[in-house]
Image (cartoon, rainbow, N blue to C red):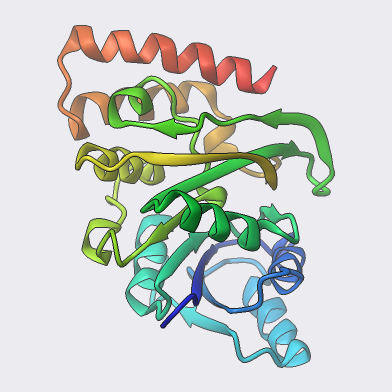
Length: 252
């Protein structure tokens, strides 16, 4: 459908943040979008707040999709992907934020580079969505081999062109760190991701207990190397060392 951007937002227990996240989408300078809000059976008041927001906003571009049971972020994103109508697909987590010009700048960059897969820089933010000043810069391009040692691609910043990457290639594997597993899968197929080094998103770290658990993060990335990418022990260790150094550097 032309330049329609389908924004997929998985929502699970995000009552404290979801209204602000929806506000940042509606504030985009690029207006040709649809938002597929996939509610994953939250145990808090997320559904009530979302329904109230949609009634007040009366914005036909936003669609609430409710999962039959709690199925996890990968399946929620895949559900949104299957129902997306746009040529372009962008992901946004239910507690993260976009700068108003995010879609406009990223789509223009994607067309300029004739890219299938793009991502942008971002900034860490506190629980209130206030930037900490720690901005993550991104490289101009990232191949599969480079990405194995540098998982700098952040889910809330990516955009895909489904004319160049069919939807069946964009389904997230149902594993821990499903987003990184998807980047590896796409890049392994010969695609080069292009990076727009502009700070266009905020990564709210508060509440992301899984991501903030360092031991769990180590297990997840190691399992991706060994089980999903099927790398040998030495090669896994090599890439893991570089991944660890860059991960620490991003957070200091």
